[in-house]
Image 1 (cartoon, rainbow, N blue to C red):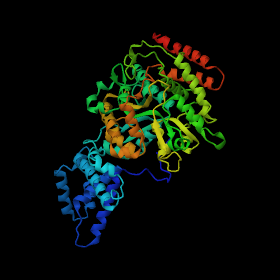
Image 2: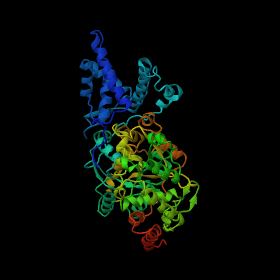
Image 3: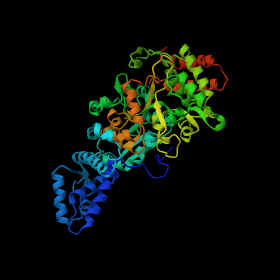
Image 4: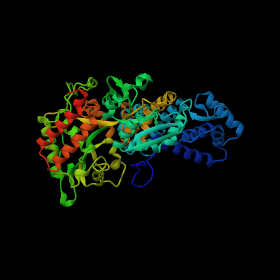
Amino acid sequence: MGGHIRQSTGTPMAKSDAIAMLSFLESVTDEVDGAYDLLAPNPHLRMMIHLMEGHFEGKTVTASSLISASRVPYATANRRLREMIDEGLIEQRPRTTTGKSFSLHPSETMLEGWMQLSGRLRRVGEGAFGGLARGQDTKDYYYGGSYIAAQSIPPLRVLPEPLKVSGGIRALVHGDPTFMVMDALKRQFEQVIGTDISQRAFSIDRLREEALRNAKRENSRYDIIAVDLPWIGEFASKNVLMPLDQVMDLASLDTADFHTAGWHGAHWDGRAYGVPAQTTPELLFYRHDLFAKAGLEPPTSTEALLEAARTLHDPKRGRYGIAWNAARGTALGHTVLMTFADFDQPILDLPKMAGGYDTDKLAMGDYRATIDTENGLKAAEFLLQLLRYSPPDILSMSWYERVRPYAAGTVAMAYGYTLLAPYFELDQTSPACGQTSYLPHPPAPGKRPVAPVGGYVMGIPANLAPERIPAAIQALRVFTSPEAQKLYVQNGSRTNPRYSVGSDPEVRRSSTIFEAVDGMSWRDELQFWPRPPVPEIGQIIQICGEEFHDMLRGIVSPKEALRRAQIRADAVITPNGKL
């Protein structure tokens, strides 16, 4: 897929509150200055507005353009500009190697001050013109709103020095909504890092193939590559990625800010091979309006899920109970592993630990596939039951196909990654818009709920030319920073790897999905053990996606599908001496 998500009106995503307030303040300033001849323009304010607008829109701002925006004589504007630089509100970045030409950027002091000011202006406006008077946001305002607003993540600031790297930063990514948002914001990120960005986006299978092909080249064609979490073990073992601790100080990333499962999933043999760029658990999306109308409670078990699907399944009226990944191969293979997790059955013989299963020692190689088991049989039989209440084309549905009918209103529930939520959250014509709630996978009776973690980390290719590594690390820090993650959300992303971003008030207002995921994380429901990142996991997923597809088509029984998948998985692991 390509392009960025748009609302039903066809207009780009709404700007953040702070940016909207900037436009409002500029309009008010224009009105006040034009009301009376005696009123003189405020050059400090006008230059600040122009500088902030340029920063948000990725436009280069020079001293000449800033002086022009001041609307006062040149000499006066030049003095006011110097005052702002001396006060630490404006930073200068060299545009040329001679250092005689500069671009101007808001400093961290200006950005933080603007965030605080915009929050105060918003509350003043609501109080004076009806927001608070009409009872809107009163709880937020009186019970901690002003405190929370102070914790808002400020906008991205430019690097003090532009990155010096031939040809700019080159990235290989997945063609999903979050990475497409990054592409849509390319100009702004180029302004921040001071160099060009080129981005190639592929489907999941083609992305893996290209990353492996790139590793065989003498020098990497990419500075940064996006890596699906289950590939970490394979890519580390095959020297596709370099361990990050050999080229950067990991503590500087504020690693405690990442969702535990997402950060843990970026490791192999105790070393980090990537920085979480998007943490996107697979959840159950369900239409709470349809549930309420049918008198149903949110499903908290596989049995309740099947009952809800049966109740809401009405093919004669064009509505089906549930959609999920059931297309042959990679898509269904992921569903199998996640359904096994619902029945507390890891796909490998992982040791039990508090809250789930331990994956820390996988690099030692002492593991085997655990498919043909009692719980595996229960999971297979559950999928067959789920098939009864699914759309007629379910066996060809994969990543996006399962969410599109949900967004169209023809499906009452769907398993889906959070990154797919924009398909209905941002489309006001969708029957699911504003009517969707989110749950972790309902587990088998007596088992713990699990929200299997998916998503991507960004890593540095092991064969990247040494002279490019410092710039790649700098760009990696920018792309995965809290400020960047908030920007992705403001422009339509529904993934987030950081606690700080999930608690940001603007982010919280954009979707209920962030509060739901944060709650799952704190309850230790976000888990990545359902897809353990061993080198053979891609083949195991493919095997499950083929054998279980035959089962769903009625070609083989559940027991036979389990037996065949076990034999094939054992054969995949055995050559490495791990059986």
